[in-house]
Image 1: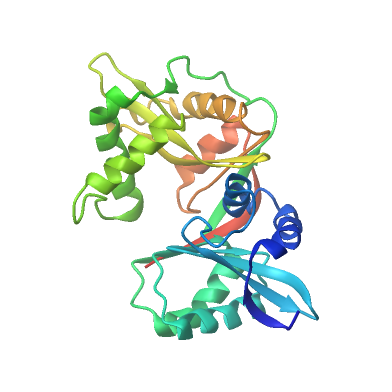
Image 2: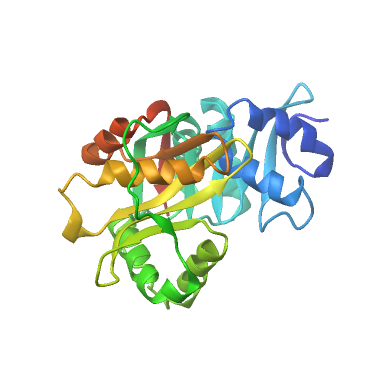
Length: 278
């Protein structure tokens, strides 16, 4: 196998699997795709995996679809990969994953990209195994499709708070279908008040055999500051642990209130992610 960057195929499944298994929590995104697709294939989930080869061995890789997700990429390889991707002329919506790799890719890819919407260089990657340290909220449950008219606005509010613009920009049907897919897969969790409005919601966003990555955590502003977050998060953890033993998430380092809630539940820091929104 020549050195350099090569698009991987099914012949590389075993080598890529070994690479992913070095850090299955950080690499849950690609692990989930590999398990769902039973390996790489020509129609591989709307993207491709670019491998980094040295002395004939696969030493790193990067999922390249709408998003870029590095796997075991060093600072030097990341910078070279950013140039390679930039010269390809492809456009991406985001880069996310281990901070060193993401920021290295962006250090050179930025020369070929528009001004980023946001760069988040420090996002603690947190994980929990075993029982949460607080009692779970009893009302949290998986949502139903007949609740979409209530769930979708809550998801959109979370998205706008997190990203800075509405997911309905350019039309909302695609976003509604995405939320509906989460509901159908029993990946959407919420609790509701007496008026039928969402109090708290979260999603089991990415799931592999070893790890569930929680996404989309949101508390209705009317219920914030009441000390409810930790118990709801504990309930999310218990639901996630029915799918895999490790539950993880990543959060912006400046979000001290969220970090405190996660630590109360029993999450510990296991790495650092970064995100570039394009």
